[in-house]
Image (cartoon, rainbow, N blue to C red):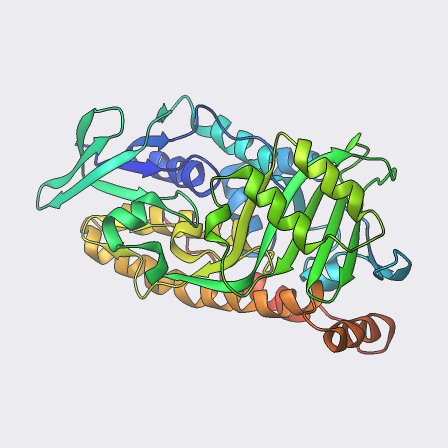
Length: 391
C-alpha cells in the first residue's frame, strides 16, 4: 500500500517535494492556503547543487529559457551617482553562463506543472490541527475536512503554520537579523533592462531590478530596525507608513518609490530572519525549505537549499521504510550544507546593507579597490554537497 503524505505549502519546496515523493511511489496531497499558485516575488537564484536537482527533474531546459540574465549591478551613492558596476556573480558566488536567475513565479508555475496531474492539490485550505499517533497523523483542515496521513511535511515558509502546530511558536526558532523590507512592482521609468541598481545610505537600501525588457521593475526597500515591527504585519497601510517614515528624508528616486509602494497591488513586507532548529522532525511531522531552515534573502540561497532539501527528504523516505530513521538521515545529509549557506547571509548583508557611514565607506572602497568582494566562498558553499543517487 502506498504511504500517504500531506505536504503543506505550494510555493517552491512543496511542489518539488511532491514531485520526488510521487516519483518514489508515495500518494501525495498538497494543501495551500492561497486559491492558486502565487505570482510575483523577486528573482531567485538556482546554483551549485540545486542545478543538479532541477536537471534530474528534467526542467533545466525550461528554466534556462526563463533565465532573466541580469548582466550588471550598479551600486549608487545616496545622491544617485554611481560607485561601481559589476557582474552580479562577483558578489553572489554564481557562475556566469551556468547558474540560473528566474522570477520566483516562473519557477513556482513550472514546478506545479510537473506534478499537478499526479498529486492532489487542495487550494484555499490549510491545516487547523494535527494529532500524531502510532498509526499516522490525523489532520483537521480549516475547511472542516478530516483525513489521516502516514506523514505530514511542512513546506509553508518562514512563518510556517505546520511548524507552529508540531514544534511550537515561531519565536523559539526565528532569528531576527535586525532589518525589514518591502518589495513591490512599479513602472520602469529608468528604462532598466537586465540590470539592477543598488542605492545605499547608512542603514537603508533600495534596489531596482529590470527583468529583461519589462515595462515594470521590482523595487525592494530594506532598512535596519532594532525590533521587528510586529504591529505592521497584516496591515499594508501600517507597512507603507513605516517604510515612508524611515526613508522620508532621502532623495534620488526614493520619493517615487514611496509613492509607487502605496498604490502597488503586489506589496510584500517581511523581516529579514533565519530559522534555526535543532531537528527538522517531530514524530511523523517534518519540515523542509524555509519552514525548516530559512537562510534569509541576504544569502541568495533560499531557493537552492529548498530544492536540495526536498530531494534529500524524499529520497531518504523512499529508501528507509521507518520514517524516524529517514528523517534522521535527511537531517544528517542536509545539515552542514544548510548551515554553511545560512552563514553566507552575514557577508551578504554587509555588502548590500552597510549599517553605518563607516561601514558604507569601507564597502564602497572595497568595490573600487583590489579587495573587490569575491564570490569564491559562495561558489564553494553552493556546490559543497554531492547528491546521493536514490533508487
